[in-house]
Image 1: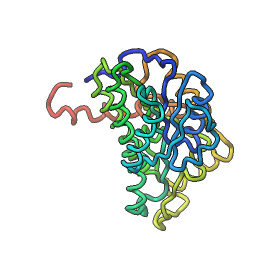
Image 2: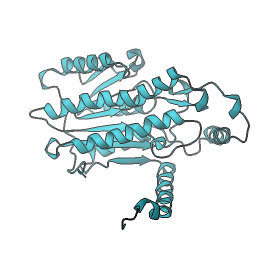
Image 3: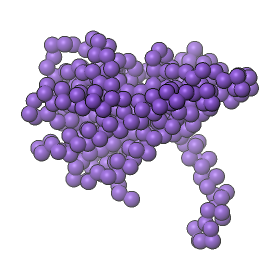
Image 4: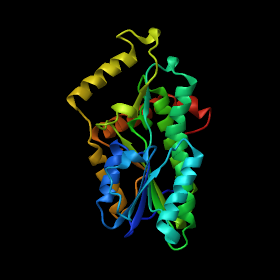
Length: 300
């Protein structure tokens, strides 16, 4: 199996960052952090550029662009506008695919439009920006290489009731990223990191969360999704286990700037790390239980 991220990554002086979904949450926190670094340059994007008014207008190192990741034309236009802004020496050093939202509720009641829009945003949007970024990074003659962060979630590692299509999108991001990372030639020095945060303070507020219509068959209080929702809502009210977006931004910037090998996966938060550990330990037990069946007469 082709190894990934084999060399230490050095964040260059004057690095260009492209971040999607900068209107709120992790994207906004990371854009704010990068903008505060005098030796870094920033392409901040959002579906509505007016949501980027928190960033200065007069700084030539910062460009604010409209970008709807569900539209191939919008993605192409944003890359073209970024190249025009920075001129003939345009290159990308760090790309952060952050745009997305959660679709929760009873899976049986989800509409075709809701499910397609969710996967279009979480997965195909990430795939579009990633493939364009790889093209720019590998073609840069004097500046080949870069780092692509694809924001997944604890939901890309573990699945819970009532979020089936959100999990599907994040699981897809994980598999896609790992596969593409293994396609890279080591000489290209293109690195990938799948970021897997647990609860972030803005994840379940406002436009970052959509709900399917409730289904009567799943309405009882003892249904798994209802029990989980009650537990989560209690935790949200108390702020238990929630990370600040700024903490996630600092972790991402730290991975990019520390001058070490980039991890392919980065669970963030004690909850994410512990649940990931629990999942894989449980899976090993389940794997051992079916060893005889899986072997199909062969020696394992």
